[in-house]
Image (cartoon, rainbow, N blue to C red):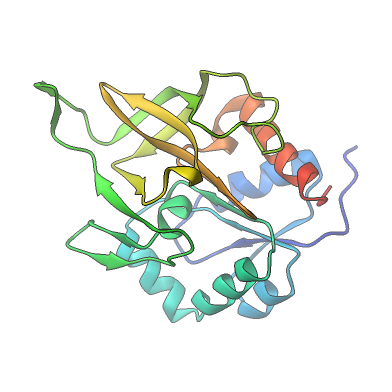
Length: 219
């Protein structure tokens, strides 16, 4: 039986997310995680997970209507460990080009862009729904949630948009989708986020939750 930590991890529910698969992954590795829509829970949390699948602007509108934007920003500013997943990665950046332009949480500087229709003259299937490789970019994976993940490990992706960070220093991994190389994970200070879904990426992916919990003293 996995021992559950007494550290309090909040999985943020804003009506757009793969919440229960994330919760199950947390339970599997011993993270004491709770799904919540309440700003009080975010304020009292030891760490936050922001999952998500869907539209950027709708997500930001939902976060605003639930009065969660400032609590999230304050928690990250105060140094609480933060884990963003898929749309949760995109939301932490400055803005998105989805359906025009929408502002994000601006925890990191950068823009969310749509995959182009073609790359180097050939058609690009959008969304990308596939297992694809992640590989390192400048940052070492040591002392990150990817610390025991192999170079070129396959992870599971489902997305039509990708992030272009303003600073390359935030980029932890990149991925190549039919000739287009893009950022697939970021790590900066207490922020860790992935475009791929670790909870849907078999044993290696579940291990990322364990690594994240361990390095942040949450397990």
